[in-house]
Image 1 (cartoon, rainbow, N blue to C red):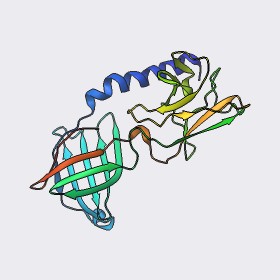
Image 2: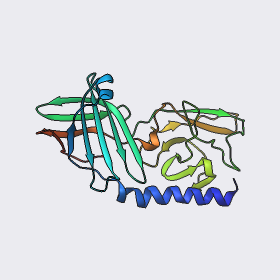
Image 3: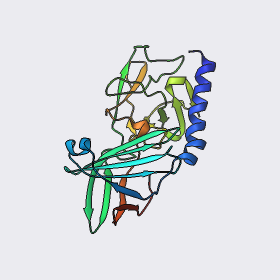
Length: 224
């Protein structure tokens, strides 16, 4: 892939998540309790709630499992998101909490002279997850939030002379903690996301609350 194509793809990613995504992501809808299917029963679902808009192009589904786990799915004509975690009910209030917090995506740093995942003059390798799958849209903040690079496209916004620490930032606002970069003889820095979850499509439910009311889930606060 040449530099021109990489830059065009990178710009598309930035434009989509900065300007388009906020306008198409619906949230805050009441979800209706649905009759469990045979598949739901086999999978130990206790309750299933759904919302589908009038066009049929947008749908939200929450599965609440008997073991205290939940799965959330959000589908639209231009996007598909999901979430997982734990649920609990107290005083007719359903509370959802993610497995991964929005500002604490697990990640690690390694060092190597291998250039397999290096583009051009970048010193950062392509970000990969625990399965080894590439995450081409993951940015790397360097020393500060104002300096970031996109290793898969050999692009950087801002400048730096030395590297003290880095962190990952994803298109949906999820980030890793800041990680110290050691002085090593190896030339390149590789950052791995230490989870199999698809962080790029993950939605944050951090103490998110719904009120249970006559077969409906009514969101109390919107913090996705």
